[in-house]
Length: 120
Length: 120
DNA sequence: ATAATGCGTAACTATACGGTTACATGATTA
DNA sequence: TAATCATGTAACCGTATAGTTACGCATTAT
Image (tube, rainbow over the protein chains, first blue to last red):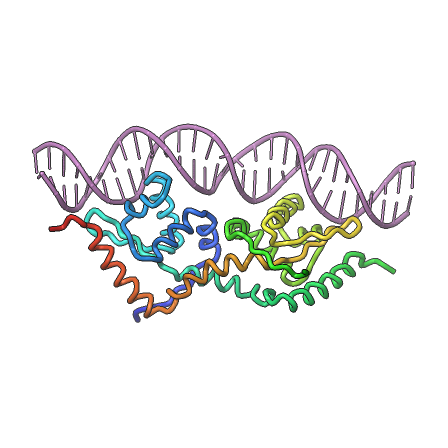
């Protein structure tokens, strides 16, 4: 059974994506795998800092490391992003402006009533 | 000109979404606007903690506050999530497993060559 | 064998973060 | 007017985070 599909938690993905440097790292790897050092040179921070970010991305399974001699190639693994996408999915309904306006209006009125449940 | 469309930074949105409690808050408000206190009662942490989370969500424009007497209604504003969605958009290409495999394979080989540019 | 390269990790520092309790303020109720 | 309610904020605390420099360990080159 190859190509087994695994699901990842939204938690670790969202956490990893919170840092702008890590998002930039993913953006970079999106254009192709790279050894860690070469990747680090693209950023204004030190190499160890990038190394630590890569470790976090590894823990979130957003990148995969492959050793090749003294190099370590990092490859993007977009799988965990599916968890983020499916979280977002539940909000897409609200993006249709007119529908959203109506929906929130109705719900707001409903909420207002609930505010004073003892009324009368 | 009503209904002007505004774009928000992915940065603030990603930051706001990094915390599980804040995501849960949004999930809750997705079912309808609520006053702050009522919302807080749904969580195991103190009310001030929720108040602070709401403030951060406010700063990220993910919620909108409406004062009504001594209550403050919080309404979901999904707009900033569009920034997250469009960041994700660039990764959807990779989700088609077979295509992604081919793509990363090719790119990894390409990267390998680049590792030893002085070769020969 | 020795030097150089690529990269991770340890130790340390400053700041950000999430939570708590105590308090301040404005609106409602008695 | 006094008591109560809804809610935000200040002050404080412990931990997490991102960054830095120093160092260790393979692997490749000389």
